[in-house]
Length: 511
Image 1 (cartoon, rainbow, N blue to C red):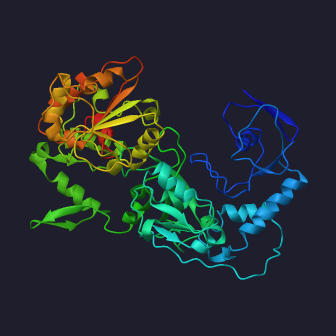
Image 2: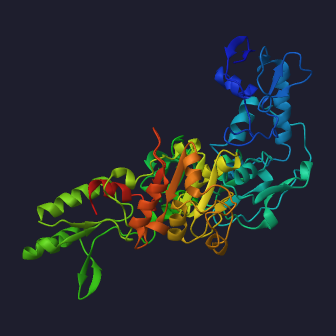
């Protein structure tokens, strides 16, 4: 572990850290724009310059590995002058439109210009102007404000796995744009709004609706999928204005799917917020007193009362509803609206046992009838990150779809592939169904699927609704359990649920 001195303070850090990370470990703030701990290092903005003894000029601390014996100065006159110069350059073409910018009040450029910049600029030339890009209905652009940090490009490529943003031109004429100026297709595109350190990329639905200092924040859990992403709900009065991700390393890190980020408009439009009673064969609005009166008037038919829970119903509500039904002499309740076939003999049969963070410990993943990009985009991004790092191999049984990372296709006949795998005569290669059907146990191919699962240190299977909706789902689930070898301190069998309330309903017996 290297030891280095930062502003006269000697510290010991882990191997592999940069000078910037070492400074932050020592409690020293280093200004930056392009650096982000979850993205690859670019070293574009040069705002993180520091002095390192024996170095002829200031060094970009985000890209400099910390080494033994380094003596670093973060507040020397040369560092101060260098940061002022960098900030002056950044503001040469940046419009001074803070009063009308949606980023105002939570803008990194604003904060750092105030703290590290000069009080005036020496440049009086006309500023350049850049045409705004149409990135779709979610991300609003003001590209004249762009400082070329390339965070959006690196996120699209490295995290979302959809390389649809890049840069054209050089120097002052460089522009950030989408590929062929098309709209974004990623399910995680809204995260570039959070990543942008200036007002170049902002939320289009939120544009000009509120100021950050007007909002009150409430921590919550997302219900748009079954991941349970941690979120922050910003509201003004009784109106929800926006939803942002909240950091949780074990679940969503600091990312959020577009569905979770922008679905708050459903709180105002087409929302069921009152009971309905069927009159003359049609549902009509009613008061709660009228609705409960209808229930009470059922009399001798109370035993035939049934209850259905929605896909986002909280556990507390389902528990109370089940208790009410029991008091009325009924046990007819269900939350499984889609007819999923679960094995309820053990709780681990319907959980994501690996845990989301545990994906980073796995070395082999088998997708069976699952489409994580559609069902859980943030989870899919974590899988993709591991694949692109070369730490995880993914194979799939089921329909072919673009998951944003390399996948070995085993065919879409789930039952046939699994049964052949149990016999040990299906190799894991990119083969069509016709090719798979022609294989024998003597085929000179790679190891069978069952052998690969056995050889993997931490294998995992992710089962999706492509299996759970089949009439033979129980047989397939049993066969998958047979493919998964037991491991000490590791359970690689996972069910990828589509709906937030499903596991809670199963735990409560509301099914």
